[in-house]
Length: 302
Image (cartoon, rainbow, N blue to C red; front, side, top):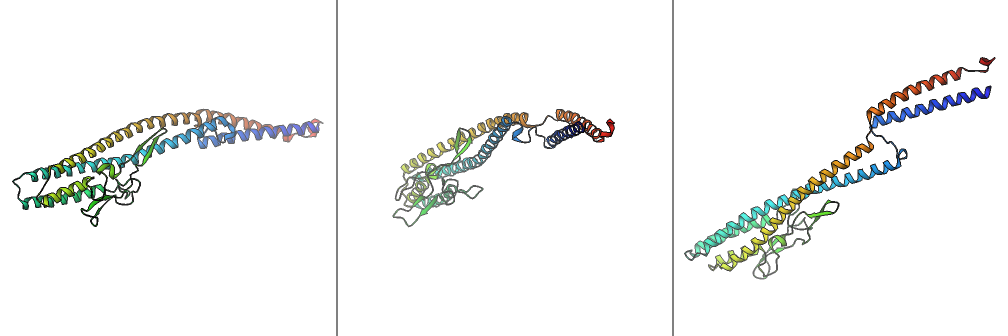
């Protein structure tokens, strides 16, 4: 009889402890809002949840990359629009100066204006973004990409000292995009004594006006340089559109993954509260049983 009493006591205690543990687990789930507290509860679901969280984090990084790339490309687009406006002003001056009725003094005044506009072009070629990086310097973005080498063998020239590598930014699992263009691609390369980039073409044009000997061929060289800039500007617009499309696609992917993740890990509060109430009742019953068993003794059976 004594053994039977001890066994009843232990069974009641175990039942009460089990009910208490289950109630505590449900309370923790209600507090966290999660259906799985530890991976051991459901290893398969735990792995799935971790995978979704990693994929969501990666896609959110793609969205941040898109935002950064859009800022850089938008600034480049605006800068190239301004460059185009300046070049049109230069072209108008050049056409005006090519007219034979202009005196040497008038052409000298045009040359001075060309120099002023070329200074503006140089400033645009050395544009910085909000982070203090030079927009057209490639990967060497901490140093100004264009320098005027006045000490070079005649004639002086605008030297491109930037990097020719374009930075690629990942915006999707299998997609990356260039967030800018190097100065040599935009304004043209630079060689000592040569006239290869837009800045040197305008410098050459100014020198010709100072010598009262403007050449229509130089205007043609500037038109070729302008075509190159127009091509880059078109490419920038295409990339900006691509960023918009990829951002929408990423948003759709994020919504889908977050929905599935929520369905996998988020707690069904109505079900959990119902379970909590049932477990509370079960615990109370177990506690009452344990109390009755504790009151039992050998004398109850005499």
